[in-house]
Length: 374
Length: 238
Image (cartoon, rainbow over all chains, first blue to last red):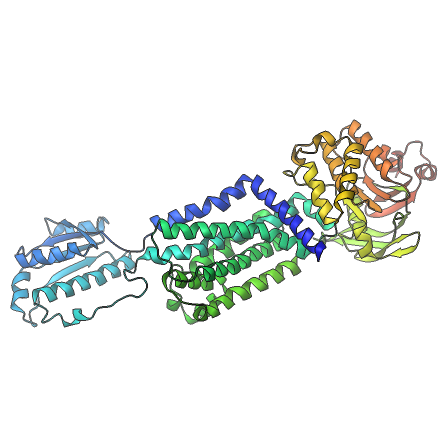
């Protein structure tokens, strides 16, 4: 056992020196997380706000102006007046605006008349080439119309607007609150897998593996020795993202920090071991990096629920995503950031990442070749 | 501990579609300096890897033995030092760090390590370069460092695959002196080479060509058998 630890420590110390002396590894490990946080935290905003809206008011009454004021105060739209009807089509065709709102003549009179057979009319034209944005504009506009009609009728007709929806944990449904806690999933998914994917392949390409294999060192000792330094490096990255989430983005952390770090440790171990499996199987740095991108990046984005909700996927893919630890870790991360849930509701997710880590370590050890057979 | 010998019996090795070794049978007696000689592609590296246990024979067997009798392959592995032909050291690690890394892999006690490291640094004349990274060593010094790493464990069987390739004549001479210095009652040396002048320095030469063992004997006996005046003429005459 003493011998086992001595060799593991020796391989780990060697790997640690390689990391410190290789500028590429250091940049990837320390700068990439900051780039990711900046990119996802600041640049990507899934909340649609201040969308350009061309407006043609053919009524020009106090009621139509009040309605447009409601549209403005919602914060979703920045209005630009249209001075001729022909320019509405032109604006849409030239992609100058995603939508045009046209208030028909008699709008104010009809609102005041409150005749259900002859309602006030306004037309919303949306650019269907971006159907997601078009749908969102329609939903937002429906809400504004509802609120405005309630205002004009003194609440009598706006009964439906009395139904209020309150979102727990993320009351403003801010996409930043949703994205930043999930960043560790992507960063580890990419970094941990990529860094270790290179380490064994590099030894094969450099020829040092042949020398190493001729010594009494065993596969488990090499695997563990290589995992330890990258484990520490990845956990450091997780902590950097965690601190940035709290301080720069002001995201609350409601759950148990210890539970969160435990989840990170298990997930990092699985990701690192997956990188080693790739490295052990491919033996070439170029192939290893391509594999690492494919199995690290794609599931993090597509099958984790990071961007696309899993419940909206076809049933087969809902089960398929269960194979990826990214899905389970993302669930743990978001839950612990935004709610004070304990271990019990997260137990299946912990089982998911734990099982993945065990399988990957076993695969890495057993797939590790102790000879130079082609 | 006495030197290890190796007996190779009918070893054939197929690598993909290529027969790298074909029914090779020979004996590497303990305590001698053996040379595996042949042109490029003769199968020297493959035979080296088979002797190390890094390649398994497709057919045939390899046996290790010493004065007391047979030694298992697993036991022999722990007492064998192998330095491959390709550059295999870590360019960013210094000479001293290499020795410390191999000290732990071989589980050497600290005291024994210090005295052996000093002995090796003195013998190779590398003391002044102990802190220099392997990537910044000259070709000759690089090979010496590789030799130091594998000699650290005092191997009973030392396998060196083309140790003098890419090395200047002075460094070649020094490497040979080193090899002869360590060969003897406690260490068998097996090295491969394409240089015929080096083959003549070995006490026994195993001639490989196209994966087939042509002959194995002392250089003088081989020259008599092939009726040549120069050792290199053995290959020219075939």
